[in-house]
Length: 293
Image (cartoon, rainbow, N blue to C red; front, side):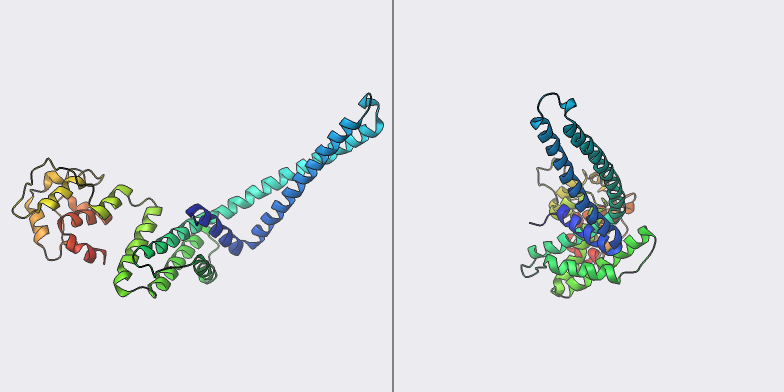
């Protein structure tokens, strides 16, 4: 089973090897050297134990044992010093390697976004091999920069565009807009720019509980919409929306043929992004798709 963290680690290794092949090669050498050093230290420990257990009488009078122990101590110190240098070097390499972590994280998000498409249509299946091939192509074909932050931006933008165009070619026309939305939300969520509570409300309309508040505008506002407005009023940026629904501006908004572009009454005209979409979903769910477009 593919996990986000497991995939991130794999993608980080790939991009680091492509971008800094000399560092990745050095890291692999250090891993081998580290294993060799640990093996040698174990052999020295075993040798010391063997000398101690086989020595008879006072070990301080056993010249052979003392020579073996002395040489073992020197060798052990040399290996330990090498290991310290190797560990420090490996940490430096990892710091450079981890500079590309944003690319691995972003790309992992894209993979799981396209994996979700199978929930829409079972035939929408995309293999990890296909994904990694596109990833490699994108690393090779994206714009270069010696500034790491710029290079990361170029890599992420190029791969996002590559994934989008390649996946869209295999989608039914009716599903392309939904994929664009899923991709956008996935990226924004990974950057903590979308509140999970708001996202869940947008998808479900909240948990339907008994509404203790009377509908202030029953002549135009549906009870279902009013109940959703009440629930939405608990969201961070939409608090107390229910208290302002008697404002005549809301009826104008509701009656509009294009509410998705209509100005909301003050101060709610400051809402943007998914918060605004939530309000639109409550009042005019028929205009959510045009709003996404």
